[in-house]
Image (cartoon, helix red, strand yellow):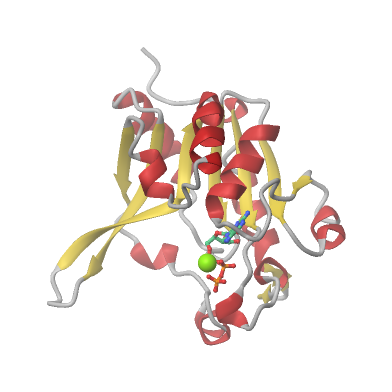
Length: 204
Ligand SMILES: Nc1nc2c(ncn2[C@@H]2O[C@H](COP(=O)(O)OP(=O)(O)OP(=O)(O)O)[C@@H](O)[C@H]2O)c(=O)[nH]1
Ligand SMILES: [Mg+2]
């Protein structure tokens, strides 16, 4: 049995459809890091790991289109959250698998998709999500799921259409309806994301 997914069977989606409210309402994916838009960093890093890439954005679509890949806005109105981005991705995904990354985490692991794919196959799962170990209030490390780093079977679209139509907005409550694998990445710093302008400056 195969132990790895073929990158050509996977479409990568950069989630850049949020409000960016903690950053003052700016379009977070277009904020610069090392002279380049955050979403472009994510797009290039993801492009190394999959066959196709696309972007989910809701504002400044022309700016995202200039990156040279398809750009899909949410079909659901009023910024209902990242699940709306998953849905936009699944609706336009022409490969058997979709993997998502957020636009604000430019140093995510280069083996992200490979490891998620291995776990999905090994555990015969429908979804695989990343997780890190983070210190809790008592200082002890605990598992923190990173649900926006999510590999899923494209066949889950119908399930997501139903869940979002029923008002579901939480990624983990939707994924919990399916067979779900979790992959722990020891380098938690690779998942450092910029929610505020201060954090954007702290991205090394
Ligand atoms: N398509 C879509 N993506 C979203 C939506 N809300 C958040 N996201 C994406 O989900 C990821 C994680 O969200 P956050 O870090 O909370 O980003 P955000 O919602 O823009 O920022 P805040 O408004 O400060 O919470 C980011 O990649 C966002 O672009 C939404 O309503 N639609
Ligand atoms: Mg948010």
